[in-house]
Amino acid sequence: MWEISKPPQVVSQPLSEFEDAIFISYTHVDNQPFGPDEQRWITHLHRHLSSRVQQLFGEPLTIFRDEKLQGNDVFPEALLDRLSKVAVLVTVCSPRYLHSVWCQRELDAFVNSAGFSGGVDIGTKSRLFKVLKTPVPLDQLPDPLVPLLGYEFYEYLADENHVREFLLNPDPEQRWKFYARVDDLAQDIARLLEEMVAPEDGPASWSVAPAEGGVVYLAEVASDMAEHRNSLKRELERRGHHILPDRQLPLMVEEMTTSVTDALSRSQLSIHPLGSRYGARPEGTSRSMPHIQLDLGSRQAVGNKTFHQLIWLDDPLGDPEMAQATLLDELESADAGNRVEVIRSPPEAFKAHVLFTLGQVAQQPSPPESTGETRIYVVHEQEDRPSAASLQAVLEARGYVVMLPLGHGSETEIREVHEMSMVVCDAVIIVYGSATEHWVRMKLFDLVKARGWGRTAPYRAKAVWLAAPHTSQKQTYTTAEAQVLEAGPGTESTILEPFLARLGSTATEP
Image (cartoon, rainbow, N blue to C red; front, side, top):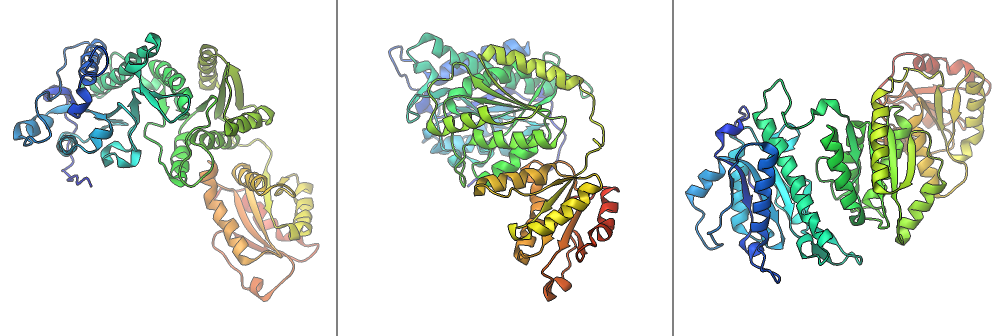
């Protein structure tokens, strides 16, 4: 358990006041010689990271790692003092790291001392960097490292049960992935260090000003598409775009959905690279992480007229896993709409299309406040179809577009249509006829849950329609969450007036 003290709020400390720009925290077993060349992994990382960061930063920097101390040494005051004067901490995570008391003390000392020098975070960036030498369980990492995006220095092999570090790959071209990942790490560190020395009224001098780009949601992917994603991320960041998610996605599906929905709401565009592997499944769902992000991005594209979604199928794709093949078939046959594109192309061609689309998005005018088409979703149980049809006729006669639940289909299809209708409609009428009060209550809850499904605008009007059979329970029914309207046969038009008046006035929050 990590006990982090709460220091007083202070102004962020400039880079010039730190003695070391970077401190590399690692366990010594990960630097033992291995392979025919008896290469020391940590030493190799240190040398190349030092060179690359200083090339990007443009000035000499001090990059320190302890080369002497062992696990049974006493944690010295000198090292504690040194960690209090470090700008950036790079943690090299591995199975041994998780059990190293020494590494835990270094991280604890850095986080605590960072609180007195402006905090661990600088704007949206963290002074902590998580290098993943080999896979480690996310839930076993120290708390400060869990939300950080990691820099993986390995890849999964075809059977997904084995991994190979980049430097151990017999293919020389594959070993170059190690240096590409060092470059990713170095660029992000250099940007952060520049931000710590840049004037408050100006951007960092070596990079493109973030204001010149947009906000892009680049979906987390299955292992076979990780390198393509990293390449696209580097290109977009080089051009000044801010990439989300900028933190590790949660492992629980509910928390992940909330996190992704929030990030999508702040983005202009979402990009979903899909390969032959389906990807890892969060806890609480049978869908994979890439699949969930794909669905949430599609809902955002339907509910937000300025949002675009690009779905990329690598070409050639290879032999997809069964679940992935099913997903790809659905994508190929779906009516995606004009703000959702499914593209099958080689990587460089897709990258060019992304840059073109971002240019188009940046130039498009803001949408008008009203399209002239008002959509009312009439939610009802099957037994109340006649009451819903009567409402539908009155509303359509007055020029409204009426949406109804799916009459027939699987449970999944009915739920998807319902959720999408809750996202795109302007107003909702819940028919309380043969349904139970519990059913009505759950539909009122859906008014709130719609934001998690991708809704961005408030509802303009909400009502519960008390339909036949008329019961004593309905005579006393009230709710503060929507208007309550009751009418007999043939009086729908008159009783709807207060609802329609609200529909034409200021919107109310869902």
